[in-house]
Image (tube, rainbow, N blue to C red):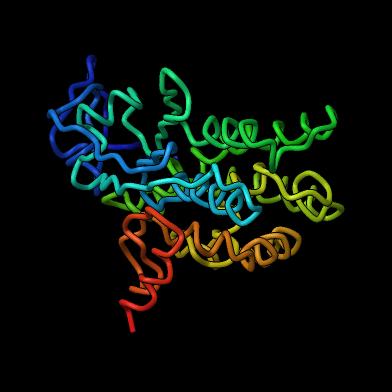
Length: 286
């Protein structure tokens, strides 16, 4: 192995350029950077998010709940622009002290309940509305197995592979090799399991699928990091079959639009306050 020219300092010190593309927002400190209250809408559920793979998990579930006829799942979705440091406002930090999207407030409870971390939000909403989580203990446990698998695995894909392959200021072989190897192992885990299962929990579509699809499903269908060819995703046909199946769901298509500020205009809905916003968005783009 070639010796690296970098030698770690005895005590690491933060520099303003640390972090590559995200150096302007990444710092080794927590807490709010400025005072600003969050906006609020008329519905009990208030979501503050961005349409990243983490963010769309929640909007997909909310749209699935509404499509299922659960009217109490109506929600307001407000845009949190991380490049503008919205997630470091005092209002957002009150909901999520970790300053990461998504974050949810449920005002139907008194006192209001804050929920942060995407997996926690999915579980909270599934339990609140008794939907998209199996009732039999063995299937519920399997669902939670895969939900927590995603929470532990996706940081390797996003923070590891995605950062060094797509965002780092220079291409470094060791971290790219290291994280590519692990991402492909994870894809193989999914591929083996999905060989004999329609969804992650057999024939039932659950929050496990909703959690995993925005990362791994979008990856194998060519929509994440432009890395499909590099990862040879054709080697995972069962993941591709599952990913394409989920992508056809109307609630998934709507959920991906919410809080999205990039791509085609017809794919963006910066804020969502009522179901008709999707129709208005389409009309505005004609």
